[in-house]
Image 1 (tube, rainbow, N blue to C red):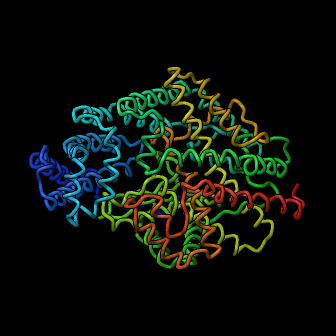
Image 2: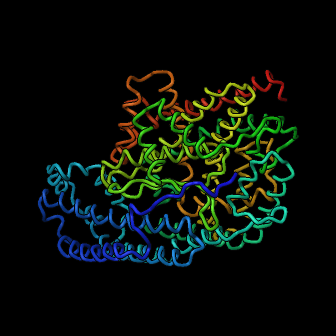
Image 3: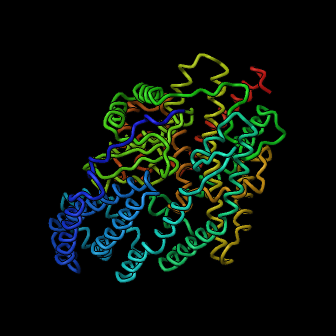
Length: 596
């Protein structure tokens, strides 16, 4: 696909250039505001009135939003220009400067946690403070895990040379890797896209090249993984977290027991969904067992369509519009205002993301669009994020940020809307079969495979704590086992496939992020079932209201209008049963269409 003329985003709604005077003005303003804020309120929160406390929160929010704006601009510039030394230096400068500013503001959260319950309850009578009640409650959940101010500052200051430095090393290493296939050099994103080819020998070559490149770099990736796991262990021990994922769960506003129930439910369902699906796929591909590289391969006897960017936009827009014209109109803003960076490019980060930026601006989306069906689903997914972030802006900077567990709700729901729309307008039964097969594969990637990632992560962090540094071979073996358990006997997890943990950036960027995909997928399957069966009146209005809440409410409150409760044992099984029914349908169609 020719990607030369695909649109790029326009970041001038943030800043005109990395060297523009506005950036320096904002840094100067923040320096003055943060010094004044620290001087006025440090060691004095307990003495001020409720009205004054509300005003301090508003001042704090204003400074955090400006810091967030600078951080978002630097990150987005860097994500599409990783190999540009000027942009990289700018990104590092912003991180270091923002860390100094945040260090001056650190006292505020710490002192909020030091307030007695009686003192805080008195301040809660003020309507402004009441508005921020959920934000305050979320902060105070960390009360028992908070260190003294000097230690908290030291951890924040050292993050640049510690965690952030290792993450940067990983990103820059990945961006420079080149995969040589038939004498052509490909970036990681481009090489992964070749695995969607219907050419078995090409997929095999790509798999061998990934094995070669990751083997060459395994020592570095092992060092990064071990160092970050040890760093997390040290901080967890100081903060009193015995479970490696508890810190993340606290931030996600979800109980450990709820995540454990999700993981257990997925594990129990694996034989009936992923194992069956890959057994079917081995028959479609005429193989006794499929390799790891064949998991996402197209069905060989069915045509792979290529979609232009205009095709993708129209499909996703109409899918959203059938569900909610209000959401579709918000989505259109991203297309009409250059809020999306679409094509893959040299030095551009792989994958895709939607960045909320700050409420005073708007979200942005980054893609690596290659014209495949999967790319349409990725657009639908990221646009769901973007719409969610846009709707939540009204909550303000501190309350708009949605915990990871619910951040995937709108994105996965958008994928389902788009899939159902494409299935409805397609007339060819073989193409419909292909779409269903690819959708199930995608759902398994989002649920079963992400839980396998989570189990790998848990095993790595647990064993790192008990046994010390893990060798590359030990990391490979953990990956091999967790993947084999998840995908089943029909998939051959060989020595090449055992290296693929090296290419999962979420394991490096955000520890224990990955289960949120499965959380979101299973939640959405249950939620979509409520919508499709008309089990709740005014579903669309309630759904938009839920997205608009941002991070101001927990999952139990947000799901209550739909009569759903994620803490109930059968909640996850309902969501996973949707995938199981799709696999049932694929088994029947395989026989009806003589595709065995």
